[in-house]
Length: 140
Ligand code: HEM
Image (cartoon, rainbow, N blue to C red):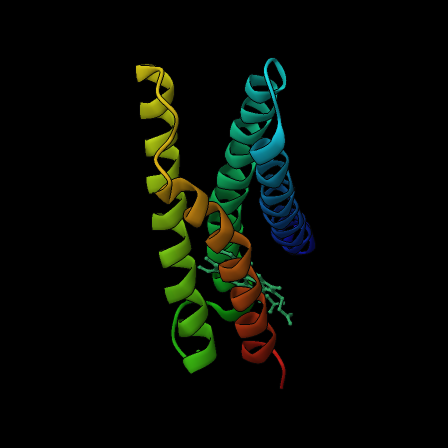
């Protein structure tokens, strides 16, 4: 059971990061896409952003599960672990705001604000920072 939690933690990480990188690649394609291709690319981007956001939710659920399963609670963790949690919280706000802006733009039929692009770029960078902090936190 605990090993399954850990597997889900890693699988969600792979999906979140893969979705984020694919979205950056599609964003570059969008810049040169013409006509009918544009809505196809943006729809794919929206789906990928949702996959990454759901994966982040799975990371929180499985991460909290791992804290209790392996460590019996929240005491005894060092700075790297708390740094990881802090950056994960920043990433969660980043993704939440991006999701909100995208759904607002979709409903109002306008293109998403430029800030969404920056948020999309920040996602994979923050995820890699979290992986680095996780590696430090759990290397003894
Ligand atoms: C949000 C993005 C997250 C990413 C990218 C991430 C990534 C990782 C990685 C790469 C590891 C393996 C570290 C290693 O064994 O060297 C790990 C382990 C772990 N993560 Fe996360 N994590 C995330 C969120 C969380 C959250 C929110 C929590 C807790 C609330 C959490 C709790 C844990 C725990 C307890 C382990 C250690 C499991 C063990 O001892 O083997 N993670 N995480």
